[in-house]
Image (cartoon, rainbow, N blue to C red):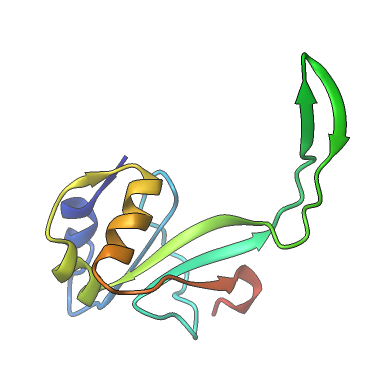
Length: 112
């Protein structure tokens, strides 16, 4: 669960950004150079992804175009629009989009 009030507390000393993992734990990674107000830091999907039917593997899934979310980056502007609340990851993605702010994706290697 991602608690917006807890993340907002990380905006101390004039900080404008919070970076956190999908569990809501604040990270001390650098904010990506190209971060927008709402950014997903992503890495290519490397897990084996299989299609299963009736307990049997029936095929492999194409992973091209699939990315794993490493971290979320939110700007103070987004926190002001969200107010407060506790969200599951999917709900947070939808709540931010509902504010009119679009999510952008930045590959993890661009961080710095």
